[in-house]
Length: 134
Image (cartoon, rainbow, N blue to C red):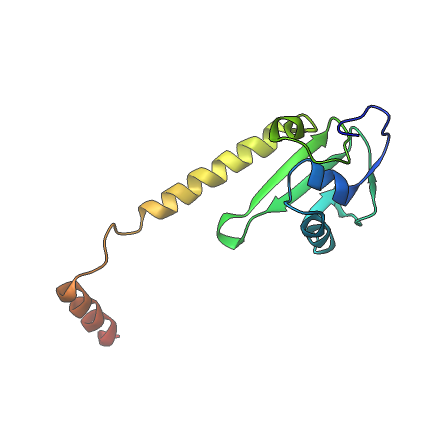
């Protein structure tokens, strides 16, 4: 039933898996249960039935690279297909895209503050001397 028009409702974990937000249904289930998936600002349950037009907020990634997407469901599917088919199941909001681009730019700026190389022996001695002063 890949992207079947007969479907009027699909379980949240099945849809997130079919839309390729998570690699397995069990990972989708864990994300929902841990509060990383919200509908209209409130947590949902795994068995929540999603419909076309529902708005979801999905957090993915780890602490240093946490991405939050706000999406509107445009089609339903309970089977996992190719990435091109999965991309037609939802539409990301413009605000969400702008926020993700802003956060990516901030991460780039944070990485610019890092030195390109490790300190050499002389620089390490100077660092330890500086630290020991305090």
